[in-house]
Image (cartoon, rainbow, N blue to C red):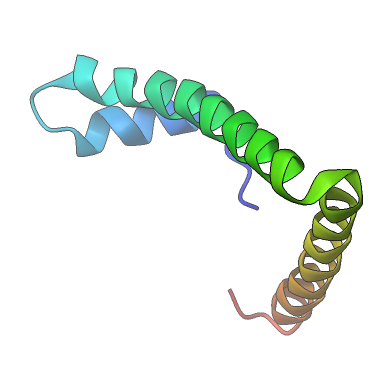
Length: 82
């Protein structure tokens, strides 16, 4: 939903990590790898429980929610909101 440049993300993570800059930089990699792992695990669990048809319905639902959120956020940006 929010797209950040990797350089900006690294700068933010090291800024907020205090004295331990390496920890802030390592969190970015940890989040990336764990997101991929948990995403694949969740997809496998969903596929095992509800099958291919249920996975399609989930994708349809996520697409509709994403379109609605995009419409709401774009409307707020056009009005000068945030």
